[in-house]
Image (cartoon, rainbow, N blue to C red):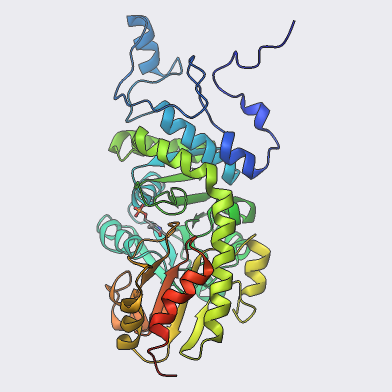
Length: 407
Ligand SMILES: *Cc1c(COP(=O)(O)O)cnc(C)c1O
């Protein structure tokens, strides 16, 4: 008798053991309905029904697994959670309504009043605001340190330090942290080591393999990759993620099933997109480095980058973000931005379309002049999130502005 292959609606997790990340991106976590659809199903429902009063009681008591309400669980959202967890090599993921709510949920679940956080100075601007202003109000204090200064990390640790938080590579200067070092520091202190893996995605870097406890994603960026939805997730071990999930089901910043479906589609092409982003970004960084109007290029794929060797060890690619200083100041940087005709002027990143930003007056505009100085956010700095247009067309668009600048 021939074997009926699709009698089960969910692909058994055991079938995915040992699969490569390209395969996991396409197939991990799919949850088929009895219709046996090939693509993922969307479950646009707020609640779920029960076969009996006794079953409802068992579900609410947690004695029987199953869906209750989409603030808690939703099958499309769970597929996304299982897929991204498999790709990061984590036990479990918890999906959230945005990248910021992933960070908030992590902090709310794991920290309490009196706790202290050490965070790298170059983190996403809103992360800075969340930690300093809002969590600060509830008695959680944060010390900001230079991402690459190991002595500064060490010196910032206090008895009450409960979390070390960083992004690597940093935004916008592509500085790279040695995760093994920070992980050791966190272990000694008994603190959580949290990595925002937005820039690399699991395709280029898997922080759990370098000693991180928890990974944060803004799914809004590369995971979607086509600028459609806002979302996020947290990845880690079962026990820790149960805490994060506990906050999420109580506070409510959950991911919508439609957005989860878009992110599932995004994950399918993530491996191939990330490779293409890296290839275009490296070629563009090399070209910019040769331009006489450009003072300095920041991209870890360039041998001139101070942490090139570390990045090559820790990452399997250098990512799609390239920053550079033009000769001059704000006028020259704005002239370059304004001369583009194709590249989108927007602060978003991780899109298949190339975007250009002037960090000093947008993403990092809220920093004080001293903080900008410390973070290297000068007025002549321009950031590109390199997309998948042809390299020639990107060069043509950037040359419009560069050609106008004096050398
Ligand atoms: C965009 C971003 C966030 C916040 O994500 P949202 O989805 O916009 O809430 C967090 N970290 C990094 C590195 C980001 O780029």
